[in-house]
Length: 232
Image (cartoon, rainbow, N blue to C red; front, side, top):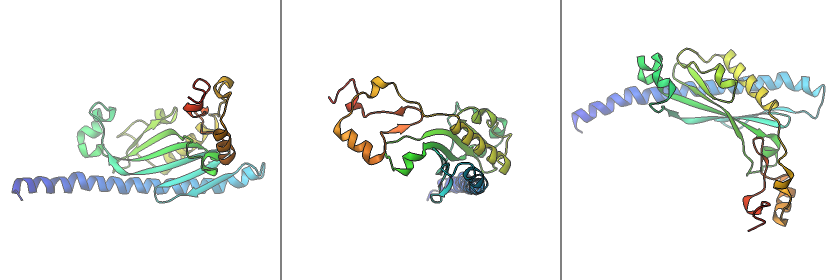
């Protein structure tokens, strides 16, 4: 191996690659804290809610090392940790922060994504249903973080380099995510959009307890069967 190339490779392995491994471990640590908070929240809320209405379910589901679900009645939050580590384009706002300018390795972040699914989408395994991304939580090796997502979650946490992820902040993010879902209702599409269905669509609806559905679009028919195309 060329000595100069060898030196560069060793330098990158012991700086950039080592930093990415550190980021991964830190992100996994935060994700496991997320699981613990959600589990405790389920134990706190479930008895209170069931005492008022037993039909309203609050449920925690550990779906593996990198996924956890939190069901609260008709909504389910799905937290998913990405196993890779990311940097950002030159025009991204964190590139101009003094924190990143001070040490370029600070820019590398792990990612936890938060999706809102209808609980029935998961219950009935409606594979065409869509989950709405409500937050992307980026965390670096030093637990500095920022959030891309729905208001007000993103506005409250966008000071990368000036904000550390703590248990209290993680609880606040979870609380705000739940409130966002509870205040965002499933809307019925206009009747003229869904006037006709085929036998296949009727059978699918009976089998899966509904058409492809998400909160952002209500439910919708497959394009080839909508009212304008009439099966063409």
